Image (cartoon, rainbow, N blue to C red; front, side):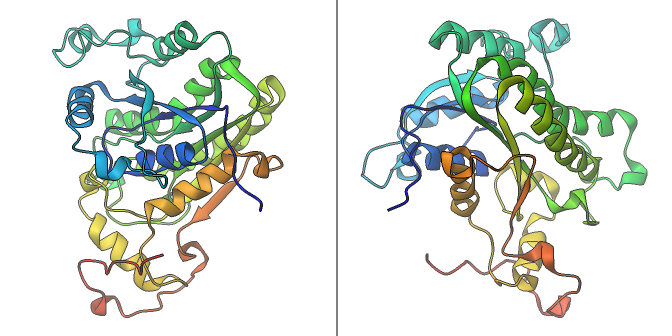
Length: 310
């Protein structure tokens, strides 16, 4: 049997703040394959996330195939907009949701990982981070500040993480991010510079695959995931319509499930994918291959139908 075996490997999944998104699903899949998992959580969500875990509110979603619970080895505060704590404005550092969590910058995360686990603690890094403060605005109405904020958190943060976490990676490490088809196709309603950020993320994946491959021996890939109505994605405002449209017009006419993205992530993190780097892997039921709608848009329900049980 050819199995995905990540025993003895440590993963960092950046961008987990609840149990409803791709980041959490990936963390769970990596744990199922035997990896230990640390997560980075946005400081404003950190307290609620820890409380839900402590009170058992996520136990159902944390249950692994063997009946045990997914346990995070560490939960770190992380605001990927800042490379160093000094880069954060004073009003952020003193904000009640930030001031008591410690160094929440990418550099602070790297330093804490070394303090907790030694000089080269990581085998897997997952970047599941995206934020566009003006995502509901058309590009023509997007401000410079909103555009740059989207690119900063959704794309440049991958560069910053590889720069600072690269020296912490063990041999044959894997770095992975999550992108979306808006990087190459027009998705009306997905605005605020987010399409530009995803395009940058994919371009940076290719360049980082070369540079980090030569510098650290690491592989760098990205998954182009189909739309999913997570709590974070609700900020887009049209996520249900995006999911329904893609499901109706894909070669496999059903919504993408987080477990499908997570399984691909576990594969890419494993030795089975040792020859894959610099790649954009589509996990979207084949929607990316379509050049014309297969279904009359007026016949698509506002709420997507659930996929069949696996």
